[in-house]
Amino acid sequence: MYQFKEVKPGTFVLSLDNHVLIADALAAFCSQNNILAGTVNGLGAVNEATFRFLNPQTMKYVDKTFSEQMEITNLTGNISQKDGKPYLHLHITASRSDYSCIGGHLLNARINGACELVVENWPGATIGRRLDEQTGLNLYEF
Image 1 (tube, rainbow, N blue to C red):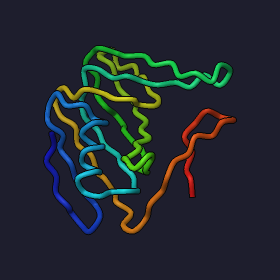
Image 2 (image 1 turned 45 degrees about the vertical axis):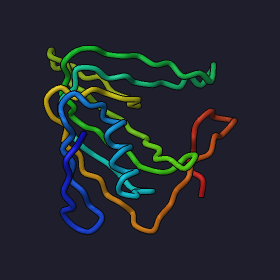
Image 3 (image 1 turned 60 degrees about the horizontal axis):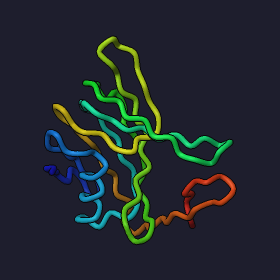
């Protein structure tokens, strides 16, 4: 699913295997390495990505899947915990073949080529999430 190297204490460089789902591989990495809080950034290429948008008027999520080859020009996010599992809050900008970009909250994406991530663990920190009824978002719980 992935290979990794710890380049300094708490900082990991990951190479995800071709055709895996980014969020699934990253969640597995965090679980297997006991990463409870931190940040992630990366780049790569995908051929399918599902974005999620919360409509604040209806308080409902709208998911949209893009099935085309795209370059990840930026992937950034944070790692926390919800219900005892890694909770990934990821955003992505992806470049299409016509050089236009799409971006937003990333639900998941399938690698087609490569994906290289840097995960920064915050040792000793645990940050939880709670559902905020007013916004409909899973906000940090300190």
